[in-house]
Image: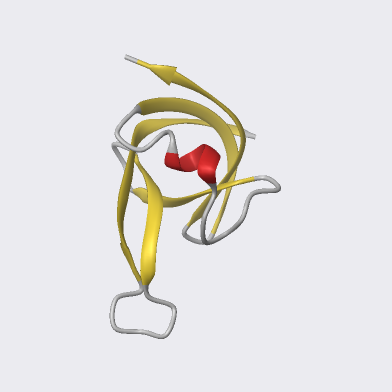
Length: 76
């Protein structure tokens, strides 16, 4: 598990494709990751929705463009 820090934002994903939808991302200093919670729904996760606009620190694993997290803390 690695530690990541960044702002949680909501933005379009896969624009122009059949998979197009609003996704929740972690925008770090290095790049933007699609944010997923272990055990959470891939298309709508109410726990991640609550984090939009906040800066968090989390533990997770990157798989492709997705950051799979299991815990997080809001930071200032």
